[in-house]
Image (tube, rainbow, N blue to C red; front, side, top):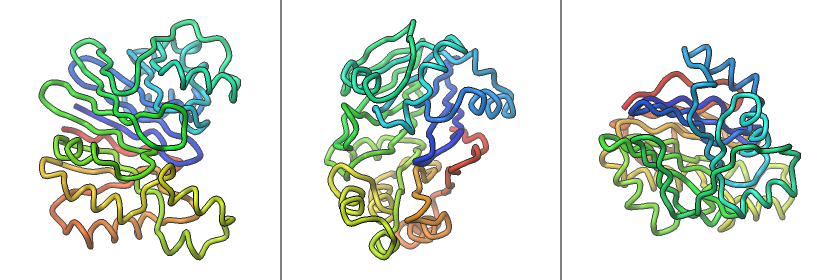
Amino acid sequence: MQAISLQSGSNGNCIYVETAGVRLLFDAGICGNQAEGRLRASGRDIRDVDALIISHDHSDHVKYAGVFQRKFGIPVYITPRTLEKAESKHRLGKLHDVRCFFSGGTIRVGKVSVHSIPTPHDGEDGSVFVVDSGRRRLGILTDIGHVFQELVPVVASLDGVFMESNYDPDMLEQGQYPAFLKKRIRGSGGHLSNIESAELLCWGGRLKWACLAHLSQDNNEPSLALNTHRRILGNNLPLHVAGRHLPTGIFRL
């Protein structure tokens, strides 16, 4: 199994996963040219992608879904509620190949299963995902809302994970965001802090690596996120940070 974060953060999200002869993209928050070029730089052709799977309706995850579908011929997997909300908020354009799934269900593409898990994040009908090849399990766990009970056994079952680590509590509290936005971020429908992320990763006894994702530009720093995780987790788990503007290297399982 191989995975690349093409970009991660409120300015746009897209993750590539390849396993068992299947190529998947998760979310379409970056433009088609960026996605195509970043995959090409890693020796991949975006036109070979078998499915685009959308997590929820926020623009940094769904904005370019129509472009990906029309320009590259990629089927879009999305829940009916997410699709309806996204089309009412964003100019997705005509979608010719939509394959609906229901949050909590499993998407099957070739020999690969993608398990969706409903989240309390304040998007419409949002999901996080586990990609299961039959040999390895990769979690794509961002825009979670808060740490809910079902996440612990999920993390314990994973071999690798992209884990939301959005904000540092002190930076958020002392920063310039208005009070309502601070409340939203740290609330039950918002995002995970560095501390919450690290404490959740403590359950990941099988993990070969974790990539911290969806870091806030204003309320976090990569070095701070890594230091917080190291303080809580120790030094045994390899940690990486997904960039807000650039892709990561190739992670392997």
